[in-house]
Length: 89
Image 1 (cartoon, rainbow, N blue to C red):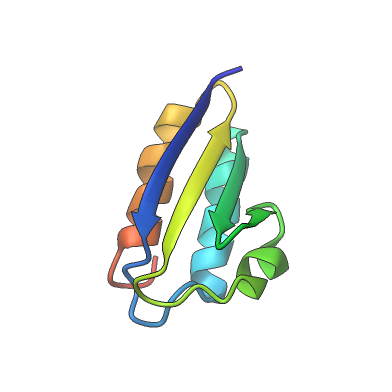
Image 2: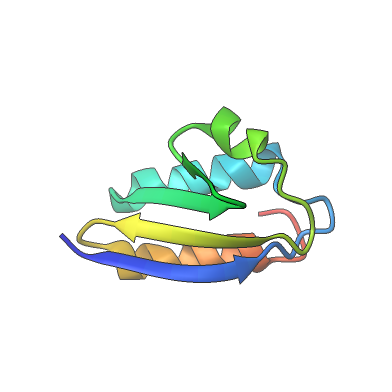
């Protein structure tokens, strides 16, 4: 199983809200990968939209993304685009 790790700063001025968290979960499902987000020592799975929202990630927050699965590298491109986008997905 392939694993990739990358760091991103949240680009959306509204931070990670419902639409962003939903898109992250959709990407994880589409690529059949496990996506974990880590921030300030806490780590949650993107499978749970509520867990992602509970992190209260605001514009500029730095997060580490850990992906596991055969298509982890491909999914990372899309995850990174969502997290760094200035606009909603």
